[in-house]
Image (cartoon, rainbow, N blue to C red; front, side, top):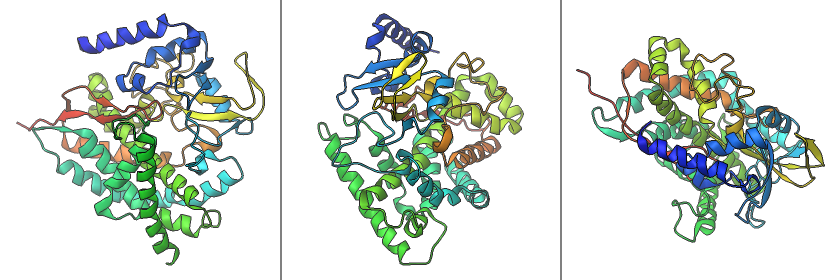
Length: 422
């Protein structure tokens, strides 16, 4: 770790431990952009694991931060006491622009809509997708500029995930980068640099309506054709989804786009960064490629691409000695639970031979456990199988540029260089 990174870590720790506990609110996009959030969660786990916070952002307001592993599992597994409606993020939805999606629904609507798209990630379809993903991964890697610095996020992570997502939607190949843009726009705070200053809310609505118009044309094509094994056809012909209104269709599209694109691409990038920061682990992986599945699981824990999920208490609930009132917002900080010292051995280490390596919170628990978790793991496994065949070294040449978001824990850029072989 260089001096600049050490200084940032020291400054973040001082800030986290100097403020009054009641003033501590980790839902701050700037903390995640700088990577300075870790000591905030460390302090909350130790001193107040079920913590009432009041955000300075009026669209968030007051909320409970749940930061220990077992407490998060308890909340995530109890969908009767903790509702997913009306949103999975802390900011309350705009009443005039509420995106309904099945991850933000409770049973029975959640169950029937999730069941409609589940076949896309079934075992037989995964077997069908694997060679397609491998072929495209090989094409991406073979086109990289060897000997030159380039952005791994743009050239590899976005390319692979947008290609895979285009295959799942049967989306026009030449427009696949639109999926990346819509994913970014959907999750970015209004003051993100992705938007013109002062126009974040308005611009997001406009771009997401463009997404709806584009996918509306695809819906019309698929609904008037025999059912096909792609996500749009499944939604158009599914008994529980074929009569969705426009905003529910858009909400489910955004869910599928973000889930299939944003999270996997950040874990692909995170794997390169983690191995670069832990050369002993990279050496073990290269010596024994059979460790790739374990490395993938460890990266998903270490990265935690979605930092939290929100719930709302449906009744008064006691948790950790605190009384959560009916109607209170609750943030399950997966990113903190995945570093819980009381449950996970050496939680801050990137350790690919970790016992119980699949013991992490990144996919959630209960009825909302990530429906695409096997597809995410498949893409990561394949890209690393193909990387190890081709490149003895991937050098990270500078610090990553991190996403300005307390929800998406990810990267905008990661500069790397693949040396030419002697």
